[in-house]
Amino acid sequence: MAYEVIWRDAVGKQRCETFPTRREADARDREVRDLRERERHDRIDAGTEPLREATERWWVDHVEVTVSRGTAKVYATCLDRHLMPRLGEMAIRDIEPSHVLALQRGLRDDGVGDAMAQKVLVVLSGIMRHSQLLGRVDRNPVGPVRIPQPRRKRAIRPLAPEVVEGMRAHALVRGHVRDAALLSLMTYAGLRPGEAFALSWDCVGERSLIVEHGRADGELKETKTGKIRTVGLLAPVSEDLAAWRMSSSGSAGLVFPRPDGEVFRDTDYRNWRKRHFDPVAAAVEASHGTPYTLRHSFASLLVQAGWNPLEIAVEMGNSPEVVQRDYSHLFREFARGERVDPEATIMAARRAAAG
Image (cartoon, rainbow, N blue to C red; front, side, top):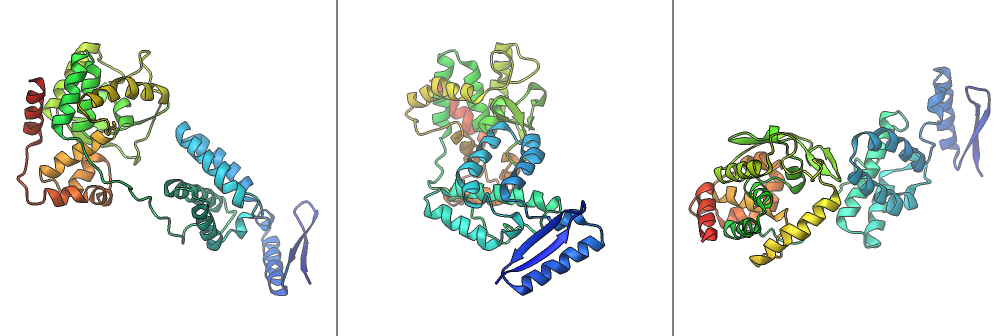
């Protein structure tokens, strides 16, 4: 047996909903009557639209306005491959935490990696939060569900200053002053590659620089954490940036632009890594290193200098929890060791590499 709730909407059209129990039908009937009495006809159908329709609203209001093209591509993958096939036709008001848990379990059973599974749940949460703000649902069903952070599968192994200075020396031998400055900046100021390629000269001072942008396929965007930070400049980094500035006659705009002065696209970055970074890394037998690895080298220097997790987090634009988690082995290794002066360590390695 089924129970029907029948009413007329704001334009007089008869509407009907079917429920499996009398209790559910009575509850819905009371809700409809209350909304009609308060002339809130627009809320009677709230949440009956499928997730696919709610996603379209979220995409227009949020993704197209605030998200970079690269991130939008990731969101589209989450939606097309994982979220829409599973929940796309379900009414958003019917999505419960149990459905989110089932989604999580289904992704795991299908062999979807931890990082992608996390992104899928984050996207679903964003859609439901947007629907909640619009008054289409009363709560976000993803809220009560724990979304585990992807675990790092390999321990961080930063490149030592001796190795980085060897790479820098090889870059200079090839006449690549820009690459020497980039290596120095990412290793000894801790900038992410995207932040380095988004840096402008007006953010570079004598003793510090301001990190206010990242890079995403030819566009400037917010930093990874969405926060602007100030990073102290060690003398070797200032010297390398000054040398590059003089060599490039740069006085304004980006520090490391494309030949046309624009921001590096993803293809430009891949080409730079293949043609410039990888050869100098291979020359010093550091083929396992990546541009991002250099950021870990900066963290290692700060740990050896006696900085605590909070101080390192502020300098690198991370949370103290992330610093403690990712570099815990470094804190243990250098806990009782002699404190080092980063500038002295770098200059000693630079002299050795110069030979």
